Image 1: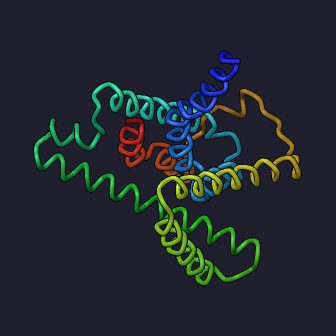
Image 2 (image 1 turned 135 degrees about the vertical axis):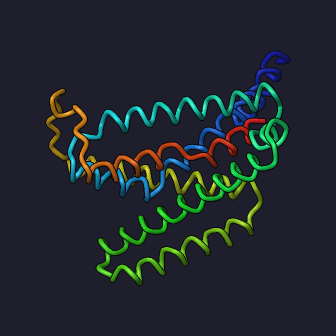
Length: 220
């Protein structure tokens, strides 16, 4: 009986010990599941086929490496990336890094708003200007609603939203059943003036500096 009681007491502890490792991963993953990145990826695939597959894979691997390093430096040093930069760099460099992180967040929010507006335009036939207004209003209301919740519930809300988006995407792929004819010849990168813009968009959507600061902070 005592052994059974001990096992029962250990089970919740095991679950709670996993949460600190799982929650940061889910929160960081939310940054990569956004409508703006999907719009860039879908447009690049529709216009250039598999020409940009290899660069996109390289960008994703580079993002994984950077996220791993940011998490590792936070765990080893006990400081987040912003604190380390504050200790190691002079004032001018710190200002430059801060502006870079702010611009990264602004551009990410802008791509998310434009991605949602594009989806509203396609689904409901509303003109693009009105769709942008509704998308921006939705972003503001979501932040206001999330600020009324505590940290745990706000994190759960973000994870539920990301899960819904991911489920919708998988359902769309399964229902649509696109025909994929993939060959090594079709995967060779063929860059042109037009594809360069899509390539830069994929790079910006994959490597996001503000996510590195966030990851190094929440793993502690």
